[in-house]
Structure formats: structure tokens, C-alpha cells
Length: 122
Image (cartoon, rainbow, N blue to C red; front, top):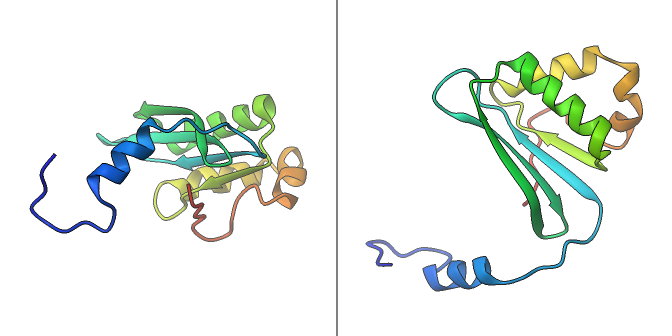
């Protein structure tokens, strides 16, 4: 792969990292990047330690559908933490989850969602 600009992380390091096997360890953390109804897709990633153990993309979800999917993940997978990008359409999903209240109170105490844009280093 050739590049016309000098990159902070070189292509060979990226390719080597993609081939490296990393054992999943640590608590389950789920990251959600809601996209809204446009051409973009909502992305959800399940991570343990430095390894993404599962990822999915869904196109065309509205904020209520994203909130429903997150609630489903919380019930089924019981992640230690969920981060949602609330800088755009994610704020609607966040508001809906907080409206559901009691069901998410314990998860909120464990930092389910941030009050501002939640950023997790993946």
C-alpha cells in the first residue's frame, strides 16, 4: 500500500496489528455509534480488553430502535459499561434509556452512559 502523506501510524504497523491474535480478557464494554435514518449505519462493538469480540452495523434505525437494541444488549450480555456517542442522533437513544429509569439505574451507577458525549478508547 502506498501513501501520499506521512502517517502517524505506518501501514506496516496497522497490517501487523490486524494479524495479531489477542486473547479477550477483562470486563465487557459495549460502544454504540448511532447514525440515524440516513445512508450511514449505526455501529455497535463488544470489547474485552484490547480485543473487539463482536461488531455489528445496522442501517436505517431511528433513535427508539437504537435505544431498544441497547436495552436488549444490557439484558442479554450484561456489559460492565456501555458508551454511546451522544453528539448527534445518539442523544435521543440516551434520553429514552434514561426515561426507562429503574431498569437502568444499576447500570447507570456502573457508568452505563455519560451525560456528555461518551468516548471510549478502543
